[in-house]
Amino acid sequence: MKNIFTILLLLKVLSSSSQGWVLVWNEEFNYSGLPDEKYWSYETGCANRNNEAQYYASKRLENTKVENGFLTITARKETLNGCNYTSGNIHTRYKADWLYGKIEVRAKLPKGKGMWPAIWMMSTDETYGTWPKSGEMDIMENVGFDPNKIFMTIHTEAYNHIIGTQKSSNTLLADVYDTYHIYSIEWFADRVDFLIDGAKYFTFTKSGSTSAVWPFDKPFYVILNVAVGGDWGGEQGIDPLIFPQQMSVDYVRVSKWQQNPGPYTITTSTTTGGIITSNPVLNNYTKGSLVTFKAIPQPGYIFSGWEGDVRGTVNPIDFTVYDNASIKATFKSECELLQNGDFASGLSQWSLHTTDGAIAQANAVNGQCNIAISNGGTNIWSTQLSQGNIPLINGKTYKLSFDAYSEQIRTIKAGLGKNSDPFNTYLYNTVNLTISKKNFTYQFDMNNTTDQVAKVLFDVGANVNDVYISNVSLCDVAKITSLTNHNEEIMHVMSVFYENENVVITLPDLNNYEIKIFDLKGDIKFSETISGLKTTLDLKNLKSGLYFVKASNLKGEAFTKKLVIN
Image 1: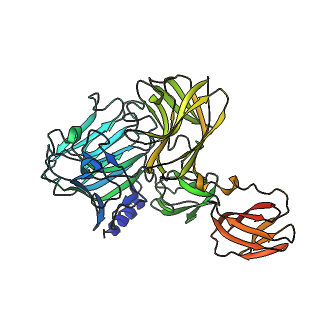
Image 2: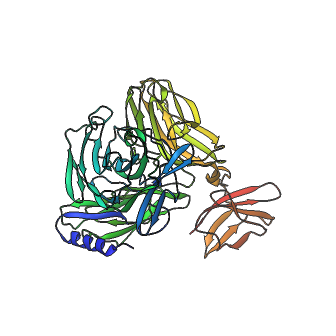
Image 3: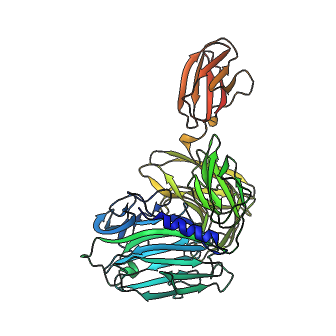
């Protein structure tokens, strides 16, 4: 186990001073097995970028393993899914990200020709578009054919290696393969400093207000990976005799800079569908205070994620106070797979991608995404609004619905597909838009494959007429609320209520009634035939939540009521 006392002591010292770094997130790898899914997700696939040779595997201990206080990412020479090498790539996207701060990773690197380890950061929502428009910060890169040299690089639309303008620096360290070093950035609103073991080696300074030169005003997430070969890593070939090779990571720590001594206030809010609790509840908090926030969904809803000064999906979450903070818990329908489909949180979770010369910009106004198109590009997919990280399971049925219109009559494409090359689609429908808002609904079966990181997409290119999209929903049909199957009886001939841990049902007459109680998935949780005007049922075994009670008699009459169990 690591010495957590050292971290807590550091936090105490920082919290007592007037300014300094405050630790707000850390992963010490104090467990065994696969990386903690609360914080880490996997990139999967073969040759996803840069013509690399490895297959990035998901949840495979041979490639990503936590043991004895360290994360080990191992590259192996073995054939898997059409690739001759395997390795690991894990990231915190949608689970933890940050805007400004100190990001530190203590690591020891793999060695040999063909190795290309990296510690880097990318934009969570790609607000300014796909790479390089939304930026990239390479905290550490090393290529095995250039031993002991550590590269630190910035990529933006204006500064990137494709056009030969990237901003970078490098330094030689004699022992990167045998010794752990702390690779870090200190990221501020006007600059990014790159450091190794606390010594500064490179600074990228904000030189303009446009996103082309400074896209670093949005949250970014951390990526840890070991690539094999590729355009740069494989420039001098891959030595087949070096494998297996490992990058060992001791910890990942994120701190926030604070100058003001406090005290601080925390404001909380929620979307429809739940409440938020905090512990302790105080009017003011001192710097370094630890507050636990818990999002509690109402019946029929599930927790979706945190926004504001807390980001990610861990619930409950411990928050270290470093300034006045605003924290929002978001909820969604139990059947819903999308995040922020109503655009209530702006463009959070959504990305606008442009290719083939397309020029477009997306904004979220009053719960609607407005896509302003100056040049739609040569193909309908040249301008695409999308949201990724959507699990689509083989054999399930899904329903996609949304509202849309355009400033002129035009067509777009809408559907779901793979979020990496070859970008094949599972649903891809032509949508005829008019100047009036209309609802569009499509149902489809996911057959012969499972895709845990699919995307919903709207292709709006090859046309300059602006497009307006709202109320986007993707539901697992099996989980759609039973209200779609049972119309609640309006007349008060039957009543259902929860009293003293019992369910009390009042029926309209003395006939026999078959009583069925369904949960939100449509599964029957109780079934019995009863008679009498009033019946009390002992249903203590039912969990808290929203249910539907259906009473049917031999005359074909049926009544349905909602039931909330606390």
